[in-house]
Length: 283
Image (cartoon, rainbow, N blue to C red; front, side, top):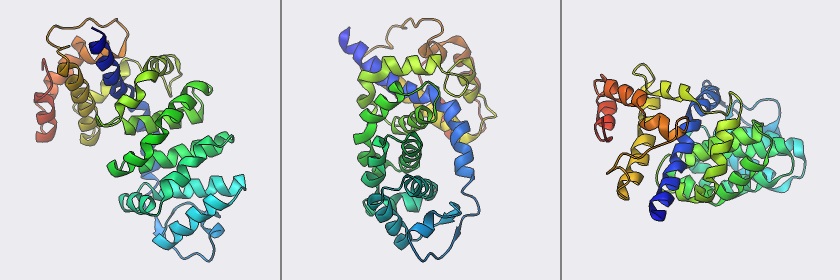
């Protein structure tokens, strides 16, 4: 029984991401869309890269200069600007690799311990964009414990808390790192259930399973459901239908309303969505 409960909490790590997914989608979509129309431009100094505009795609040499500046300066204004510029550039897949290969992840990661909350938030945002790359997650996972502590200790619904939740969401998309959240799950659920509209998870989460939702979002939430079910199935937890308290996040995913949405998605016009649904239990 204890082992099954542990696995349930591991699965809940994914559910944390799934539960936060709706607000994450709204909060990060604008940041990603902000990358449209980025342009290359020359720069004469590292500080110039942080001055005036953050809407530029930087070259390898410019990224290297910016990382060196971030590592060497104590000026909080420059640190914050550098993190914003790096975070914007990390929205591009090629730069996610370049920043990792330049040794930039630990440079950025070190800033999440900065006492300045604005700097901490910008560092978390940059790590969040970098974490879309699976190889980057291997280096970012060392910060998960600290991120969880910051999310739980910071003011409810604060910018740092939301930035931390965004990062945890990306880090729990797969089964690789969710076990690192095990000891924090109970408190993280409390945050998700007591926050305001930006943080709180409620029944509106199920709207992500509607057929009109963009394919990339549908596939993501279906992957969350699949990973949770796989964790529970591994220990035989789905052999007998478990009972989840009404109002819990598991109740949403395994309740009749979600089941109806899954049955509708089984008739979805997109083959990838239909395939995801067919491998889920009970649908």
